[in-house]
Image (cartoon, rainbow, N blue to C red; front, side, top):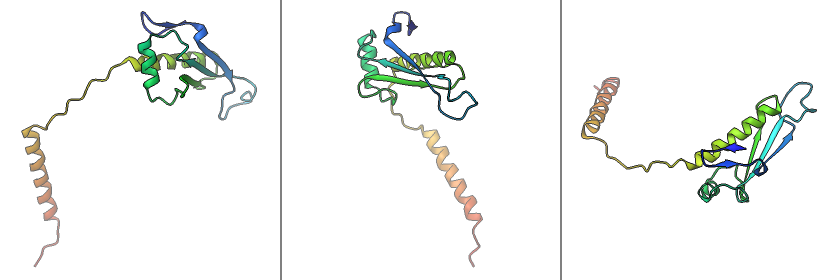
Length: 137
């Protein structure tokens, strides 16, 4: 059971975990032991509230396929248990990140003082650069 929040949790049957061989360079056991974890989570079949489902399906995350399946591959660690924990943590973080509502940006104008400081700074730079030029006779 994966706890998302106080009221939302995912059952074990909703998350499909499979062990695969990790990629990359390794030692003598890299081609023998399946330590990487492939996590699959079907959003449409899950018991998540509709609010979560709609937000997940609307997000543009590359880990979410067109069919609404979240695919996470965890292979950072040497042990299968640590990779499993990492994959579950990343799934939880993805679901939580969808619920966060971004603040609307209110466009603002620069203050009169900041505009004045910018213009005086430009004028100072201009005079400094003009003093570096060749003297015209």
